[in-house]
Length: 157
Image (tube, rainbow, N blue to C red; front, side, top):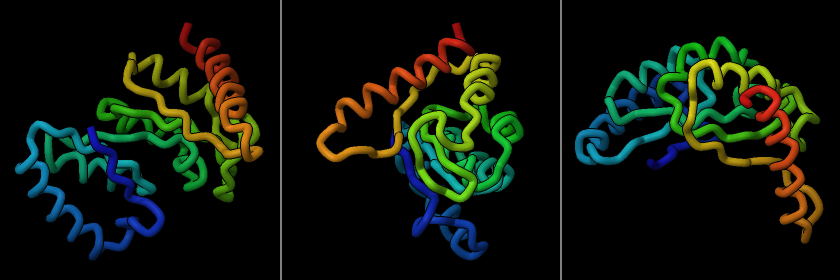
């Protein structure tokens, strides 16, 4: 699996860039049939689905924080792409794109975990949480992991 970010400076929101990207990525999907291409995108789900339709080896890295800050509704988005998700980036963000510690932003993890449970998602989860105090990265990630595990366990066990 390889995740290709389609956000920020690598955005394909512009129609010309989107069309060129689709043309190029199609050739790579043919050349590298044994590789899964996962797209982490700040695109409307319908546009992402159009990319996924190009090849059987195209999938989604679902970034919870990016979807939140783009103003997309998780349940609606997930209902369209959940069958193609191979990785979920766990990130909390505010609606104005501020990355924050888990449960301090606007990302509804209860809703996300519940939906993924209903769809029998058993793929990867990657912690992509806010950085806090320099030099205390191990403590920060341990705390964030425990917070998100608690929410996950409430919904999924």
